[in-house]
Length: 330
Ligand code: RIB
Ligand code: CA
Image (cartoon, rainbow, N blue to C red; front, side, top):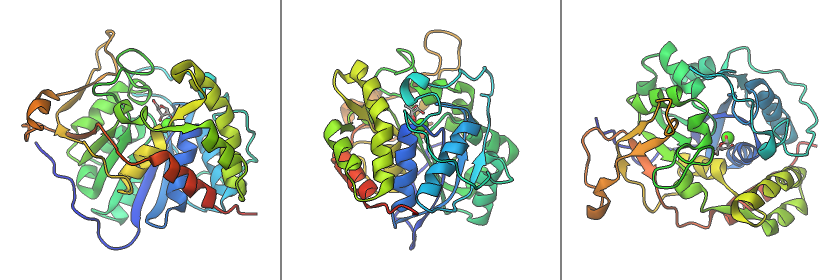
């Protein structure tokens, strides 16, 4: 089964659903998608990962309040399919998932549907047009597939921030955090018959936001950029242990930009990818069949995923420029 990515998009803003575990890089992806005129962010679902799905929803509602958005936010699955929730990543994103920043809570409540049902509703309302972007563990997408087996035929394409093809993992030597957060769910997403793009650590660790970028956000004209700059302080502290300097990987915003076609990868072969769901040291790993790399990746039987290996654009500068433009609601 080799799925071909849809061609040039139809006219009009891209209808988009974001599934996230709003943490700090998710927050940047959220505001980027909210602000870009090429994107119509129809709904957001939250999943446990950096924080619980309920906390991620509070964070997402608070961020959307900051920019005056009424995009619906639905709370998704709290627990992974086949393992206990690992408790979040407070050392990376802060206890609440917003670094050291206390966001003013939104008055808005989450949507009455849960995240999988919101995704299914949007896919049915926009058959063949909805682009799904996932920047957390894939539990909601897997549950949505169970509830609506026709979902792959309703969705235009799926882009995930997750996995690592040639790069090492970040939560274990083999596994990237979003896949490791729910390997069984990830396996279901990779097995489904929809056009899938994996934006993994191979490329996200190469695109970094620096202290200089953060300084521009902190002194931005509008409040949203300043708040993101404040949230990034703790995130850059964490990354000193990874990169040796205060600079962070742009995991989720890069995946979001690729998912809506605003960043085009320079190398992204479509190959077979399998998720390791064993209980061994490889659990949560994404095993990509890149053996064709020596002959420019010929078409591969059973290929199920476009794996992004390189992006030439200087994305960090574009991201910061976009974030600086976002007006606050006040
Ligand atoms: O491995 C990085 C991913 O895990 C990012 O999406 C980050 O927000 C966390 O969810
Ligand atoms: Ca995330």
